[in-house]
Amino acid sequence: MLFRWLKRRRRRRILARPFPSHWSDWLEENVVHYRRLDPSLQARLRELIQVFVAEKHWEGLEGLVMTEEVQVTIAALACLLIVGRPEELHFDHVLSILVYPDVFLARSRQQNEFGLVTEGREARAGEAWYRGPVILSWEDCLADARQEYPGGNVVLHEFAHQLDMAHGGHVDGTPTLRNRAEYARWFRVMGAAFESLRDRCRQRRPGPVDCYGTKNPAEFFAVVTETFFERPFALRQHFPDVYELLRDFYQLDPATWNLDGA
Image (cartoon, rainbow, N blue to C red):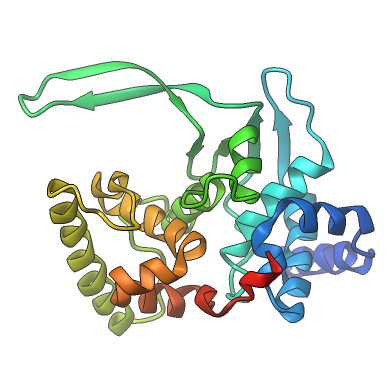
């Protein structure tokens, strides 16, 4: 109880400070999604960004100089996932954000159909760990925020994993929901869509959802989250049940946003 009171008091102090004008400039310049939001959602997102930037540990790796622009741009995309969900607690279980200048090498472990396990290192743009860091490539974050290559978004992807992990670290493609009915609907809709994507990818006609989502249900949730925010019209056309499910979960409807603002 005391901890929650102290947290609320600290956040009130953070939000008592004016939102820096140069932060607004970076949002307008770097984050396409921000320009698409209506003024009330923009205001809510700015509050979430202020808290997120202040509360996380930020560290640049391999020569990247951690700047406010890096922090604000990444925070804007992460908080886009919770801007419609006021009950979310600012990704409290995410302790730190580590940022490389570009793609980085990470350990990998794979098992083939014969049970042979191989270990090595592979290039990645992002990773998410429960109660550990989110690791990101700044080059990819900025390109995705500006939608230089529309369709994917590494920050949305990794923080969708964090939503998935929020109920204790177990990653299964199912975030915390409110009741049994919501869980039943989630399993029905996402399970059917996951199998549908696998069939489409086998036939080499995946539509707007990246075939990386067929790896497992956790990756499917992260990938369709990217598509929901990046290509909402296409997702609504090809997977209407998934679009409606995510619209209700995120309490946002990107297909209605002002695309002219981008």
